[in-house]
Amino acid sequence: MLIERVVNNNVVFSRDAEGQEIIVSGRGISFNKKVGLEIDPDRVEKIFVTKDFENDSRMEAILKEIPIDYFEISNSIISFAEESLNKKLHESIYLSLSDHIYTTVSRFKEGLCLKNPMLWDIKRFYPEEFKVGKEALAIIYKKLAISLPIDEAGFISLHLVNASMDEDLETVYELTNLMQEISNIVKYHFQMDFDMESIYYHRFVTHLKFFALRLTTNKKAAANNESELLEIIKCKYINAYACVEKISEYLQNNYHYTVSDDEKLYLTIHIERLIYKTELD
Image (tube, helix red, strand yellow):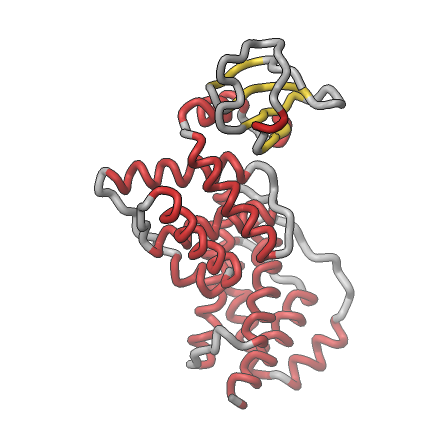
């Protein structure tokens, strides 16, 4: 690989074997190097394909501003996340997470700490990502000797959710807020608290996550024409279906979203199962 453009001592632009523009990073990768010279493969720590990023000018500005330590921290967090979550995260997280951690630490050094208003919901809806978020705080402390508040584990969790769902961060915030609203309707309808560690709550949240994602991205589920089964379920699980009708009304009034019969069916089944198992316990 040849250097095409030098960003700083730690980042250069080059091209891969297929001719795609790439960003190559590594500590001291361009030290005493000029455009046209070979990149030392022993110094390469990470390679990004630039087409994976939407805003080239913002991307280069981030690469210029952020010290290499923050990319190394992000790399450690992302490697841990991919192993723990057993999923590949979108390449864009390397820049977005590095940028986030850098600005957070900069604010922290100035005595500014942002409260995370969604922390409780993040713990509930994304427990595995939140575990990684807490480990991320340990990685940051080990590298920088800075102890960030637990709120930051929540913010990092949302970056992981964003990178695994391939949605923008604004959509992830909307999604989490919507899940919280629906969950509250269920909670207050049945006047019941749920065991967030139970497998039934986890299954309910998983279904809720995909349902809410369809709503926030305006994607309807494929229709299965389960109207006859819905009529049976309505009679069998009267209270759970009444709760679903409340959810449907709320979504129609606040989001102009019409819940389909198929969606009502599966929501009713998941809510009934959650309530039944909670009452048993």
